[in-house]
Length: 490
Image 1 (cartoon, rainbow, N blue to C red):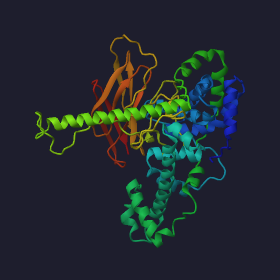
Image 2: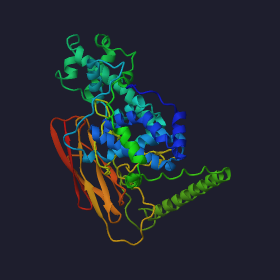
Image 3: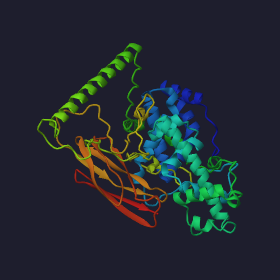
Image 4: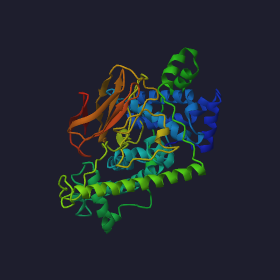
């Protein structure tokens, strides 16, 4: 896998214990095990060598300084990647226009250029969140619980996402192979694949994959016995800058860098402790309480129904008219955009990227189809990240009771080629600020909440279609009067 040696979970726990005990060799061992992996992951997210290096530098300093915030040593790998992802995503809005990608690392057993191009083309047909989930699960050996911690999903949601991404990648790879090599053999392929040289979007991939499954000519060109994920595992990784490990160790142990360490460590909020499991008497008490609540609600419903008949026409009472459809309108809770996770999606080259020479915070986040996960002891609520799901806010633990009104600072975002989502950053200045999306122009998003000082909220914004031609722009308006500009390049 990209030339990286395997890391056992027992080694992760040993590293976590050593860091917690203040072992001076633990950070060097952590660098040896994870710097190459984390740099590759950040390079996928940021596509810039220096920004990726700075994100890895700060995240490992943060992990060393705040290892006590880890709620369970068994969560070390997921916590490490979640912390690193948060640091990388902070830098997305501050990336320079002239990004400098890292060269590829030398690795044995790589795949040829033609196959690599086909894998790239297949990845472009996936959503950004699918690409990132595959990168974490296939190339970085994270299990579904760890992928869920990184992408703010429940283990079940992460499992479904990864499995669907694997299947979609297989179909997309079959489609791009047939589109590239089977146009002359099957008369249906040119119409289904579109003009030669044009990347296949998700719709064309699905249509062509369905055709392949029923076409004996096209099926001969696809080897379904080899999962495409194995090709993804063999893709080259980004080469780690030679001085990165030395920079990390110098910052961690040099006395003159103590202020820098303190500044970096402050960016990590300790996760809340997991709630204690209720005892059997408490569980019985809760069940009994729920029974009484349901009974009370039912009794209340009977009383309301009786009152309704008393005031309905023909009931002998006086009152308004009954609605024509016989149903009362139900108030729906304010919606917020679904979290796709793809905002930080790996690019088609499947080689992590990051840029930012300064430790200045920069946003993160990721979108998801309409499922809201239930918090648990190992749910995303336990993560030390600063990003929130769209439309949600993180309550500050110690908000002052009397303060002057605050203001809302809004930063726009940009979607690079292959991305169809990005994140607008909201942060309060001076005091908490209530906000809501009041309008959009050319993009899709929504939600409301409260922004807190030093605790940015990241709002997922998507363009109208997964495909596009040329550059475009849109905007998001907020109830506080600010407008965030959103751009994309295709």
